[in-house]
Image (cartoon, rainbow, N blue to C red; front, side):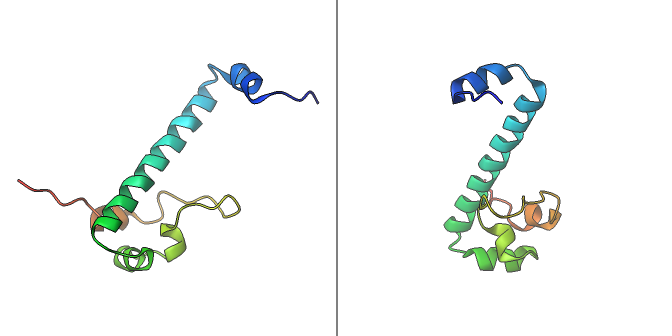
Length: 89
C-alpha cells in the first residue's frame, strides 16, 4: 500500500461523483446542524429540552462524536415541524 499526502488523495478523488455526493451530503448535514443549534440557542432551549419537544433522545440532538454511530436523518420527521423558525411578517 502506497502512502499518499492529503493533497495527493484529494487530487486522485477529484471528479469522483460518489466522493462529491458524500461531500455535499456532509456539508448539508453540517449546515442543518448549525441552523438547528442556532434556533435552539435563540429560544434558550437546552439539548434535552429540544429532544423532549421533538420526541427524540438528547444524544440524537447532540453534535456527532467521531466514535458514535452516524445519525439517521429520517429518525424523527417531527423535529422539522416542531423546530421551524419563527416567521415575522
